Image (tube, rainbow over all chains, first blue to last red; front, side):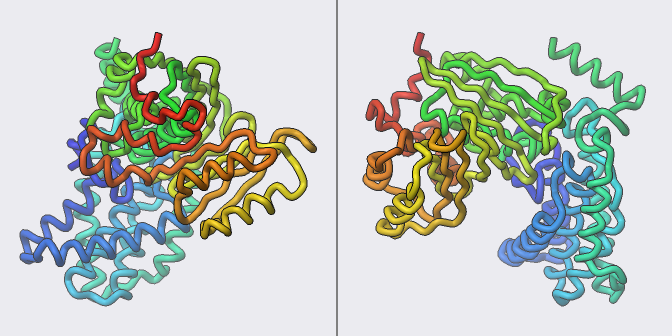
Length: 193
Length: 246
């Protein structure tokens, strides 16, 4: 998914393009494991969309505004909630999954190497899918998010707003500015010129 | 949508498309200034090709976005990119200066996440709209009762207003009113608006208008713009897609 995205293929932003691998990763693997039909999985997309809507309207979903937590974090929360819904959990459990998932990514910066959507974005999509599955499992097992998901969403807004610009999709900090990150950027520039 | 970034690619394509609609034709010259995160990552995120794709009328899922630069060249559109360190309220901000013949349009907008945009400036006026509703952009004289006349006309046409913003350059000077409506205005409605006293120009922006057509057949995306209003000047809405004028 993420490779198609990075090579300018056509994808569905969930909630963004940089985080488009998590929801399909979770849903497709759930179909393989539990045998959900496409129709059932489609219903879970509505649950995911509703969660994304709440996050976007109360916080943010773009890396430039709130760092990676806003993109990958939101996608994990959406997938976690959708997975609970899919496996027959209650709406309250789905909300707890959102809180559990989102708390785990608070503070994650957006630091794309070379200004591309490849390193670390693609791998973060993979880890994100695993986190979403774990959060859903926890919520289904009865683990609650002590800080309610609505409050966690507010924290994400607070943390993202306080994040330095270098760590909000400018490639001016983080992994993008490591010696290797800079070397990759030079290689890309060399190829373009 | 076409990747790799909803804010930097899809949002950029929408900003380009909104600017094209405001310019009412395909621009011959486009000077594009990028700010903030846009300026830092526009090459890697495909922001440049997406903006140009938007100027060519492509929607966010158009497979031609990656080759937009070549297509623009073929269409005779001259594009220049500039990066600015100037601070803008939103990190993903772009200024599009479009020229064709004697006509010039300046649009500043931001990509606010998830592919959503906010146009904040049109031709010297501070405005605010997203383009996801049928949007009327009226340039007019600042005169008493103007809004009453416009809203009465819209009411008579059964058009509901969702949002409205007015800016003016000074008392009794030039003004701009932007109205987001729930349903689009038919050609007769647009003509009635244009005929109102004090109205200088009526333009429309609707980024959702051609979604059905373009997703069913991406190749037809560029044609959709005949629907954008203001083609009243020469009455040939589709002339703009010929491009390549000397």
